[in-house]
Amino acid sequence: MRQAHWYFICPLYTFVSSAASLGSLVCGSWIGWSAPATYLMKTNQTNLEVIDYGMMIAMYDLGNMISPIPCGYLLALYGRKWTIRMIGPMNIIAWITIIIWPSQLGVLYIARLFAGLAKGMTFSSVPMYVGEIAEVKLRGAVLSLFPIMLCVGMLGIQTIGQMLNYIELNILGLCFSVMFTVLFFFMPESPYYLMQQNQRDEAEKSLKRIRAKDDVTDELELIDETITKQMQSKTTYRELFQNKANRRAFIITAGASMFQRLSGVSPFIHFTSITLPSTNYWMKPLAAVVLFTVSKNIGTLSNMALVDWMGRKPLMLISHAAMSALTALYGLSLYALANGPEDHPLAWCPVILLWLFGFAYSVGAGSLTYTLIGEMFAANVKTKAAPLCVMCLAGSSFLLDGIYTKISRAFGVYTNYYMYAVFNLVWAVVAGFVMIETKGKTFLEIEQILGTP
Image (tube, rainbow, N blue to C red):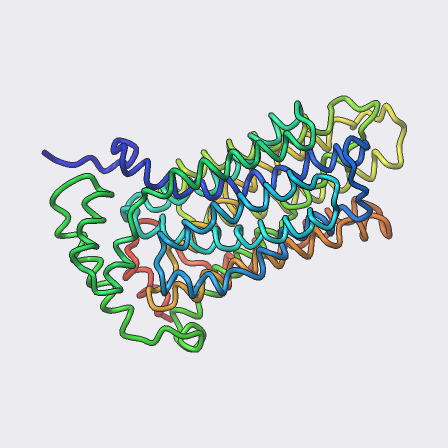
């Protein structure tokens, strides 16, 4: 009987991909936590006295910057499965800590830093794992599960969190982490990793389990051919930067990672609840944030449908060009509100622009970065390159979150968004020159394109 190619038809294939991507849902719960949590803090509904919200939020990004390189070594030594298995318990420890000591600001900083370490491991390992178990024709769609789950985690904690107090909010986050820990425990190892370790029989068993069929000979031979060719070179950072194909892949993927966060998405997520007016405004800030996350979900689902049809490059260019215009207009609308009457006729503008930004971000940049991390790098440098790209992403997020309140006090909150508009325009232009199209290409074909002049 002929096997169906669309992976949703195969329950096991869906389950493996979804269970791994639940790690992203856990990260989404930490990211989405900031909106209801900062609102509770600002309205004195907690026992925490936070002076610098930006630094409190940025501790998560700091942890995200630290762990990717050590994670790369874990991925190479112990495999994808065992590395990802560590992520759930790390998040559980962080949540339990702030549940036990809810009024200790220092404990909150340390817990967010520790959870950030888990995020860095998640972003370094899960796209790699999902990319390796995906079929070539559906790799883009399968990798889109990662940002979808990220949005689901954000939406879940933002929506339900509005009805909870601070401790209940943290317990909800703990539940997400426990769910991921339990479900992923039973997942198989990546057949690519097993083949790298010369465990052909185990790789075949893993692939049969993932594909839910007995005959995987052709795909196993393709994996063997890919690993054999790509592992002929050394697995070093020098090889990453000296080899033309690897260097070009890194420039594209690191650039996409860095400018994904320089787009301004992190401040939109973390600070909108305290940036929009909290009184006499047509919509409650927390409600606006929830609908922003809904718009991101719609954008991510749209990407899932478009990525293997339109391709990666067109979506990336359209996304950043649109975000450049939207962030500039958002800054102008905040300036108008700050310097106009309370019943300003354009009071609706910031919220609508916020939602449009969420869609523009997720339909392109927000989803494609993880797709590129999962498919651009050769097997011999993958565990070196992917963590460096995650560090670029985390560093940009840490920078924007850390300086947001400082720029707001010195030059006005709207100045931040003018800056994001420039960043988006820069990458929209640069990506047009440096990106390649990887739609429908095998890993070997991608490497060949990267190596050509």
